[in-house]
Amino acid sequence: MLDNESTPSRRRKRRSPAEIERLAAVRRRRTEQLERERANERRVEEALPAFAAAVSDGETAVRRREERLAKLETQLERKLDELAAARADKEKSFAAAKDAVRADAAGEIKHARIRMGQAIQQIRESDLTVTEVAELLGIAKREVTALVRTAESADARSIAHTGPRSRSDGAPGTMVAVEDQETVVRGGRSTSGPDDVPEPP
Image (cartoon, rainbow, N blue to C red; front, side):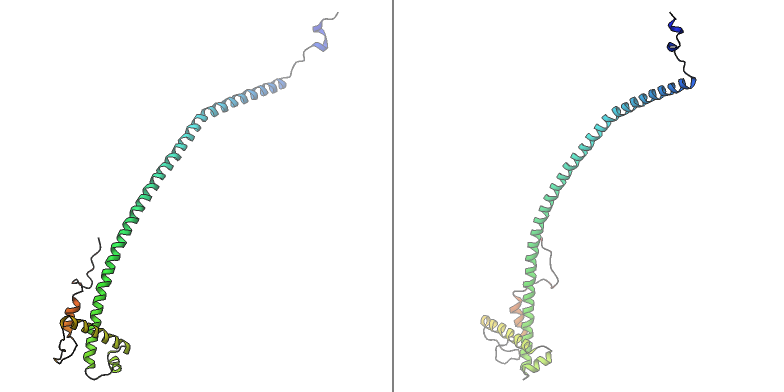
């Protein structure tokens, strides 16, 4: 029998230097790949707790934001309700003040129209017609008539309270002198000046 070691088919083939280098390079690449994978796993494991903490912090920030916004909204609603109530009170007080101003002005305007009517009555005594008086004063005839009626009405009220008075020229009649009529009308007027309007509380 022949020795097995001396059999050509069983003899191990020797690798070339190039083949050896190629296999070594493959092993190095595999080792490097495994090291990169382990490094990546370490990075992931290290980052996960930080990510979880960041998520928790973010959720906490969102929750605190919503709580603070809710409180601010509640404060705003309460403040708006207070302002609305204060506005209503102010509007009420100013409405009363406006009514007082209107009433005061109405009295002054009425007094002025009475004096205008009395002046027209005096002009009419000079034998001028309504048309002529209207042209003289630059007002409509119906305004002349209305002013005279206003003065006559005031004269009638004054006579009802004080009795027949002589006319301003001393002759018997129903016309009241302007000075006397002012006393009658001024009783309902405010003693404050025309622009003296105190602000309501």
